[in-house]
Length: 316
Image (cartoon, rainbow, N blue to C red; front, side, top):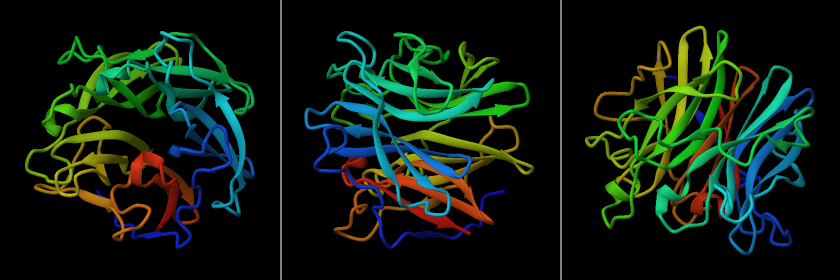
């Protein structure tokens, strides 16, 4: 059943804008992933520098002050020239597996092939969730594993959850190829793969597709963030559509995490682009969800894929 939460944006948004004096996140703060560790909130995000490179960074806040973050700098750097993440290391997703913190991130190799320039999802591991070492210089998941697109390269992260004794990675299968038609250029699906240990991933499937009849997501569906409760599975995702010309955040539900249900002929919009001339007037995207009280707190990005920073909203 779709949520009946009412979402209220924080009046101080964006609560985490780029820092113009910073060497690592002066250009953008994007892709928030917020997790709780004891009495602390950890905001993992991608920061962009003046040369256009993007790296995974960390900020922290007390649980009782979920909008007041202190920046701690880069925790996962870009790779060597020629590597899958030579230009960008973005879209962090952090989860504890077997007592270790696992940081999954998406790489951009530095080419100009559009979505096909994102060839893999990498992994870094930590004992404390702060100091990470990359598991390998190669990605742990690539974009050519879905049966329908065996020659595809484009892939980007979403979320990893545990279901029973298995881990599921919900991710963006980016199949778009450079084309003046945005429906071709930006074509994206939501997909899932499975792992017993968080290292080796298999059984890749497409679980959600764009819908031509729904103008908020007739181009792409992407960045699936999934949680499970007693009622089944809930997903927040970023839809690209001709209605706004860019991203909005919507919700889907599923009894099993594979068959996702959305309103017939429409989408369950959680957040639409904001007021004219605001920091989020053009787009809202990259959701991260955290339980808070009897409801949830949502962190997300605004205009320019994080060029205006990260904001938050409360659902109750």
